[in-house]
Amino acid sequence: QVQLVESGGGLVQAGGSLRLSCAASGSIFSINGMGWYRQAPGKQRELVAAITSGARANYADSVKGRFTISRDNAKNTVYLQMNSLKPEDTAVYYCNADLQSIVRRSLEVWGQGTLVTVSS
Image 1 (tube, rainbow, N blue to C red):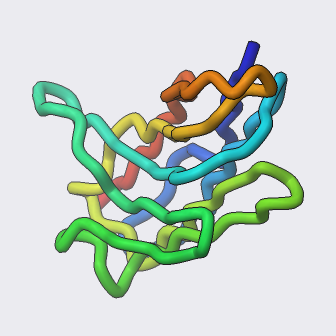
Image 2 (tube, rainbow, N blue to C red; image 1 turned 180 degrees about the vertical axis):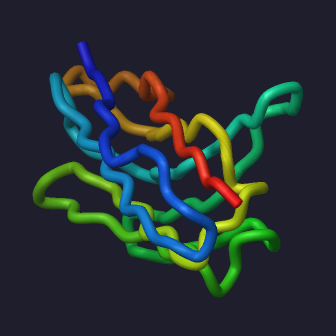
């Protein structure tokens, strides 16, 4: 069994910063892409940022220049550094990973979500 555990959400004022972490654990052979998605009330879940196993990153236009995704492959952990936060960044943030289990089964796994609230 594989799980993703997120941390780092909370309440912050506009212009502030937060750092989200997501650690993968369980019967993992390898992790390919990892990413962060978010879902605001009444809206669809959207991709925020993603990173390959080779550290190639891509971002949603709305967060470019403000958010930075990174990963520590030795710790099976992905991070999202969020700077210059805006009220419209308020959402539940979900971690996602494409990985192979130790029996070489391909899996897509989601975290439980962490709430980020940006006050104006």
